[in-house]
Length: 227
Image (tube, rainbow, N blue to C red; front, side, top):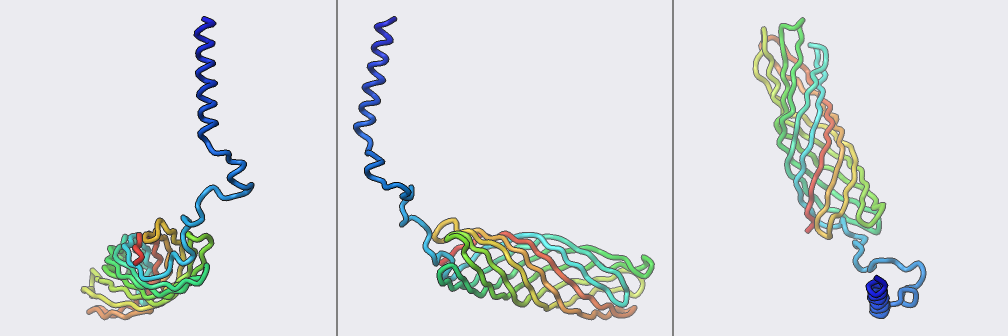
């Protein structure tokens, strides 16, 4: 028993001595407070600069104020498409221009005229063209705000007495913000929220006209490639 214990202790002592001899002396080679990683491996300060293109997908809610029918038609659904643009970066500060086009399935319905009529708005495509300004709170993390113009196409059928099919193109302004994270020198992930105030459009039906005044909120996630 003692012989086995003595051999085991001798083996452990020899192993510890070997490890100590083969490892560098950290206290001599690394000054106190030195970083534990290579500074050259950090993302550059202009990591978000340049042309970029990506895919985007998310959800949206659109509310239409109706006149003179009265009430509000609330709709919701999904959207997805492509986005791209160019960004200039000076230190942590960024300025860019960007746009996107998205197919959409955003629909709902609302009854009016004491329930005898129903309008069923449905947006099938949307697009934006915006300016973006941001600041990199860390070399690979960008916080930004956006502002620009927006467009949407909607089918606006009305069923019931005097109803018919209808459609309109809506134009308005868009504002929002979000965050983008660099995953590598070329790839980044992004999340943003956009509020859009579309202008009012009038659609004529056999039974009269309806003024539609929609507002939209969209929430999107994107994966982008920077050239």
